[in-house]
Length: 198
Image (cartoon, rainbow, N blue to C red):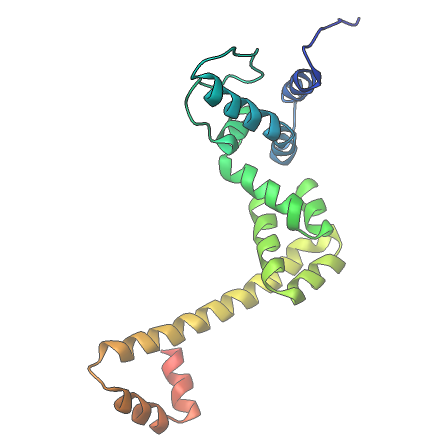
């Protein structure tokens, strides 16, 4: 049995269709986020219209329940509609826009979480080698590829932290620039490594 419905415009019909998709069982957070992101431009337009019509004029039939004359955080409204967090909306949007296809597929298939897909996307943006590796890795093998890359990244971050700690320790001491140069010149490579390990 079919039911005929009337809508004022295509946006209203699209919003109705998308909202009804959220009633489906076993819909993933990725799918919920992507569906809600389809409404982003409509929500932003209505929020802008609400602000301009609050000073006077006719208010059209609203597609979304937005408070008149109050600023609307579009991402939070999208998240509310989807039933996910605002950070998930941001992460899915970033992954969809910037991630290698294998990362998108792995996230979509539930092989990796939205958070891990976002971290992989950020790592791929920062390091071309990581990007190339993720591009050629099949979606099912993304977790192993990420683990290896994240371990290497963590190792580098720890090393950089130790170097900064050493420099901060030196900065706390009451030395002049000449004293720093003497101190550094007296240290052998092994001594510097030991200092870093400390």
